[in-house]
Structure formats: C-alpha cells, structure tokens
Image (tube, rainbow, N blue to C red; front, top):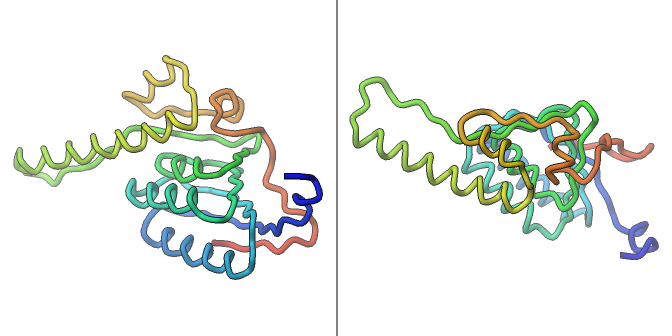
Length: 186
C-alpha cells in the first residue's frame, strides 16, 4: 500500500473490554456491522480482557481474522487466556511497555460426585479446546522450548519484551488515537 493510499484509508478507534463470552461476541458482531456500514477499512482496537469461554474466543478469532476490515490490536494492560487468541486475529499487534499477556491450558470444574463417564466428556472437551488454541498459538508466535514447557503445566506470563521476541506483537507502542478521532467502546 502506498503512502497516498494509507492516508486515504478510513480508520476507526475502539476499545473492547470484559470477559470473552456470548455478550462480547454479540457486541463485536454489532460493532463490525456498524464499521462496515461506516466504510471503516482499518479498526484500531484496544483490548483489555482476562479471558473467558474458549468457543467464544475462537469465534471472535475466526470472525475478526476473516472480516473485510483490517484489525490492528493493542494491549494497554492485560490480555489473558482465550483473549490472547482473539487478540492474535489482528493483522498488526502492539502493546504498551507495561502490558502483560498470559496463556494457559484449558480448565474446568466438575460437579461434586461426577461419574467417570461425565469426567471423560469434560477431559475430551478440554483436550479438543487445547488442540485448537495451541494450533493458533503456534501459527502466530514462537515460544522457546522452556516457555512451551511452562505452558504445558502452568500459566505462561509474557511481558512486552517477551511478547515482541515471541512475535506476539509487532512492536511496543501505546494505543494513541490521533487528536480529533472519535473513540467508540465495543
């Protein structure tokens, strides 16, 4: 894209916060519909989320990644758990110097007194979720063998420098809408 074309690209600035759940999916669907109606070609989104439901995060990853709009994602504080997968849908990704990321394997709580067949269903679902999210992580980032080892059994925390080295972010840069830009919350 030439510098002239870049200047003509219609951009929008947005914030997205909260749990990754069906409510967030609905809010994102509605907002992207409005963006397309408004002719937005590039949307800058500041994400703040500690995660939520795997299926909702995967839906947002696929939806945003295949949208006709270019999404530029920012982390100004914390993007964790399944929110990291959603964040990775951005064609460009940035984070503030003080931002943190956290990834981990899926987890669930079984009801007290659960029977073995019910527990097997839970375990198989967790394994399926882990396979889906790990394939996306491996597509976008490069962790060291030590980091993958931590991820296997625990929460893996990445600061802004770690995230840049891993390719999770393109650069360390704050979300900073230009003066006069309209800022919308999703």
